[in-house]
Length: 121
Image (tube, rainbow, N blue to C red; front, side):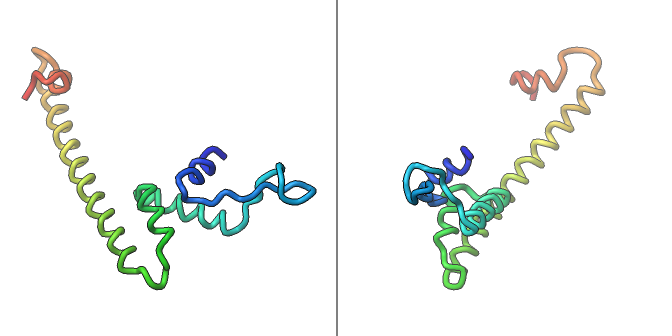
């Protein structure tokens, strides 16, 4: 429930009125199907890596009229993912080199630990 409140504070999800037996008042909040669909949209967009600000913009777009902007946001996200993947591949390659060096050198400091301490090149 805290996640729902967080989305409400960020303007991604409207806050429904409270309902009690006597009508609007101090009772419980009732969420409808539209709220559930919106939550699913938010979760799916987060899974794709969109930020909450980008998700807010996507939610504000008209599905029939704003395709170009949605495509632009997706392209920006793909570029960011490509950068992240390249960085991760570089980190993996560096760690593999360190692990091989560690396995082949029995004397002296461990190349992995030395690299993290900034004493190994």
